[in-house]
Image (cartoon, rainbow, N blue to C red; front, side, top):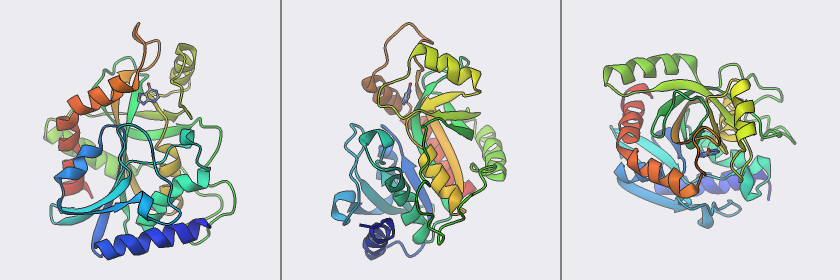
Length: 273
Ligand code: HPA
């Protein structure tokens, strides 16, 4: 099935669930999906029920859209995302974002769990993504360009909207929420990085490393959406501390940091977007 058709199937199902006034999109990363529960008047659309949609099978990820209201706004949340390491073709990694665009959503919050490369960070640090390094070795826009979304060679100099970032840093400081700003580097995973790879990432200017977000952010920039990216540092990256990494640690830190994360996301939904 062509990507456009899959997107159209999703748009129709979501509109039936009530997305007429939707203005905010969110993609919630590993262990961060709980935020969706805080919406009022929730409606659910399972990815599995959308003809052609991929389904994420990663622990800590549900596989559905949650639509609901908060702060008088209609929010569409992807509770669970698609990862390159699950074997999906790159183009499929763009369809969630493009579905939101077709629903009329222009403001997108992308979140993830990430490893801390910057040694000043610690498990629980919230990092605003200032920019990214696409180290995945590929690009979600490879292949036929969908001209109805954006140009063949899209500009990537302001993927994470600068004026929104500036405003968010001010709001976070006002509310006493600690927020770092840094560069997110994407590796494909699913293996975690080696200590040598993390030293390389640091030398390249990365502050955090993870296995998602970049394909979605590129797709969003391609179609002109305004993006805010938030990484929750769930662990220090390989070799920083003398201990092995595990997915259990990632979800544990995410659960422990839920309160801070929720505060920040609420701030974004209520005052930034
Ligand atoms: N590396 C890559 N992805 C991650 C990590 C990490 O250390 N932690 C959470 N996601």
